[in-house]
Structure formats: structure tokens, C-alpha cells
Image 1: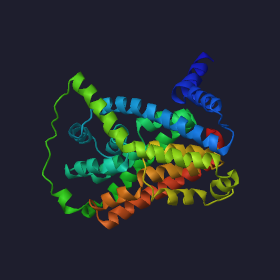
Image 2 (image 1 turned 60 degrees about the vertical axis):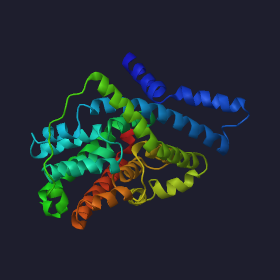
Image 3 (image 1 turned 45 degrees about the horizontal axis):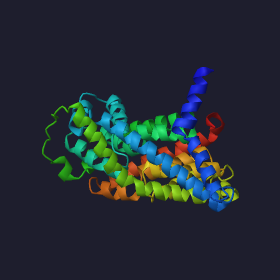
Image 4 (image 1 turned 120 degrees about the horizontal axis):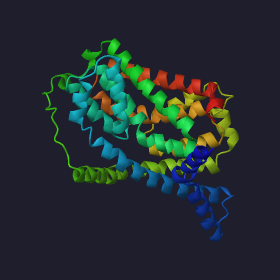
Length: 336
């Protein structure tokens, strides 16, 4: 009982910052703004989510970057080279959880790993996992959706990464990697050890650089979430993404692919959709599609692989995301 009370306090007041939402509601009301109206509710939603996500983002980036300082690309390549078969795919997927926060940042590392001679399936497991799943998303998802949904989201994301990379390896598609990558010069895999001061400075620098990149998407995502949360009728969302539409998962995935955002900008939209009656699996499919198959990242990836391999990558991820969406919808009552 005590453990449950402590966990609920951690989830609600530390990660979820419900005290902040209460404080903002009181402050806006004291200024004469009724938070029960669509306008007042939108302002409260926007301020609450922007402040909460910004605080969590900066703290998470610092700690994740500190961990990441122990796994620079050179050391990661050396580590991956020690494993073979599905174990290598699993390690690559796990390494993706402590690397960049968006797909466009992951592609240069994917190219670097591939040019170093690592198996193609292993590098694709990394490429799928890196934007879709990270430690930051785990804690942020927990703050909004609870630990069950957050934990299962991370697990299924890792499964998609491992299965996707394994399938690409089994299809022997190395010949569809562009020649400039295969012919790249070997890279020195030795990496200097950093002092604690240098690791802390690296983490601090990453906070500033990453925050500058993702903050516009946080504002955009929270803004869209505020509109959905307070202005879009519940009946509209339920009709499109609720249980009565058997194609809701496919629709959400198709809408998510052209978009570009990281997990931090996508979560507020997902939160608002779930509040309005969208099914859990449909919302998670939308999040996975946005973070893994965004149009800008696919354009970048096209420079490194030939169209057939790109099409196989998109097909595997899309089928995996849609499958996960329908499975979550079927067992939604277990997680909510």
C-alpha cells in the first residue's frame, strides 16, 4: 500500500506535475479567465503542457546525454561488433534508446554504422528504435498515460525494431545500399575516455542544442493538442478514431507519416486525442508513425539506400505499427 501511494505521488505530482495544472488554473481564474470555457481551457492546457514538457525535457536530456557519453558512435560500433544474429539486433535496438531524439538525427549514425561494416539488419534495428523509443519518452509517457501504457509502448517499439531489422537481414538487401556508403573508409573505433567534468559539460551542451531543435515542435504539438482538447467535438474524434471506425488505426498511421516531430511534440496531440475518445492503439500508431516514418527522414534515408530497400523499410514499419495499433485496441481495457 505504501509503495503504491509513493508511486502514485511520483507519477502524478513529480512526473505529471498536477500541482502545476492546479496552480495555473488558480492563477488564470484570479485574472478573470474562466478555464471551463474553450478559450480558458486551451490557455491552461497550453501553458501546463509547455511548462511541464520543457522541465521534463531539460532534466531528461541532461541525464540521458550523460549516459550517452559512455556510448559514443565509435564505442557503440565496437560493442555491436561483438554480437551476432538476433542478439546484435536486440543490442542495437537498446542502444537506440540512448541516442538522438528524432529520426533525422539518427540517420547519420545509421550511415556511420553501415559504412563501418556492421550487418544491415542490425543498423536498421537501431534506425527504427532510436526515434521511436528512448528513455525520455518512457518517463514522459508515464507522466501522462501512466506506467502501463508507457512500458508497453517501449516494449512494442523495441520488438518492432528487432523484428524489422531481422527481416531486412534475412532478405539479404545489402546490395541496395548506396555504393558511397559501402566504399567508405574504415573509421577508427577507439574513443578517448572523458573526465566527469567533460561528461557533465557534454550533457549540459546537449540540453541547449537539443532544446533549441525540439522546442518549436513542442509548441506546435501542444498548440494542436490544445485545439483538439477544447475545440474539437468529442463526436468527431470518436467517429474517425474511435471503436466504431475499423480503419481508424490505418487512418492515424497514414496521417502521421507525412508529419515531422519528435516524441515530445507528438505526445500532447496523442494526449488530447485519447481524452476525446480515440482508441489507445490508434493513438499509439499515430505516435509511432510520426516519430519513425516522417517524410523528412525518409527523404534523408533515400540518399543512403536504394528505392527497393527504402520501400521494404517503410512496409515493415507500417505493417508493424498498424498491427500494434489493432492489438492495443483489442486489449485496451487491460491498459486503461
